[in-house]
Length: 130
Image (cartoon, rainbow, N blue to C red; front, side, top):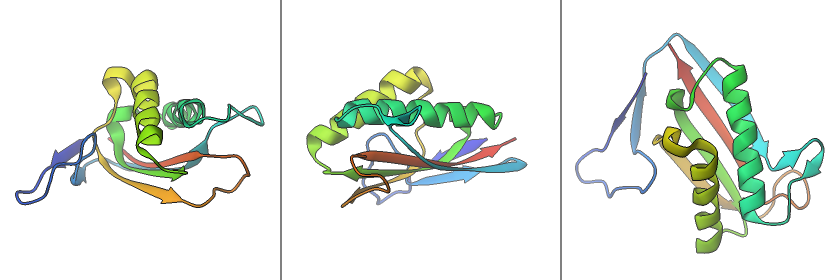
């Protein structure tokens, strides 16, 4: 189970939590998932790549026997970060997770590049499964 806390005195983070407290017996670390589908980059936009990367994350979560509610922490890495890129990522998350979108501890970093040329988005996760 993942419990979220919002300590007094900290400004709210839209779509995230300042603190998560995880209780469970299995800790799962999911490596960075990118917008690559069967060896090819899903498309040239943040929206296309974030959608594919988040679908890949969901596949990895399911393979580990978890659910979005088990996510204790997300790391998001964005090349060419902007308000438009952020909006595209939020839209992709809503499309992929819908009502299951995890409100959890997270960090979003703007980065110069990712491991493969042309990639714009990567996401990793830590889950705690009961």
